[in-house]
Amino acid sequence: MPGAMASLIAGAALGLLAEAIAIGVGSAGLAARGIGIAPSVGDFAQLLVGGAAAAALWAAIGVGVGATIRSQIGAAISLVVWLLFIEMTVIGVAPAVGKFLPGASGGALAGAMLQQTATYLLVPALGALLIVAYAVVATGAGLIATARRDIT
Image (spheres, rainbow, N blue to C red):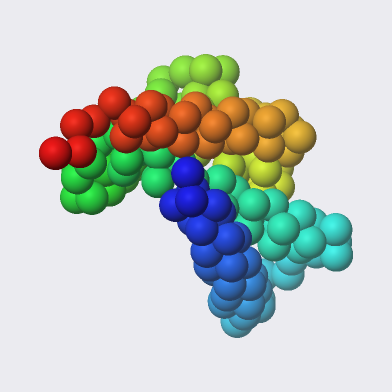
């Protein structure tokens, strides 16, 4: 699926940019309030690289969902409802289950393993494996749905 490859590249680039901006703005905002942060260079690197990788994989998931649903608006609304409502509800009600869902897997890949979030996220390596699996399933479903559609 050429769209999935293009989305991986674009997602990685946009994810890297978004993570860099978030680090800069977040650090400046905390410093302005007198809140010191002491993440290591490794933490920042994992946030940048893991966040970019998670964004790339979410882009592939989006292409797969979009190819399956066929409506851009429907696909976008479905993904937003999933991430902001369904997944957050599951994490709030059953964190042991919620940590295995795609949004939490992306967060784990980005290294969001702060003390308060350790209950809600997996270790980064397992998060990476899960979000890759979700991306493969979504793009596979998109390929199957596209192949089965009547072109006429």
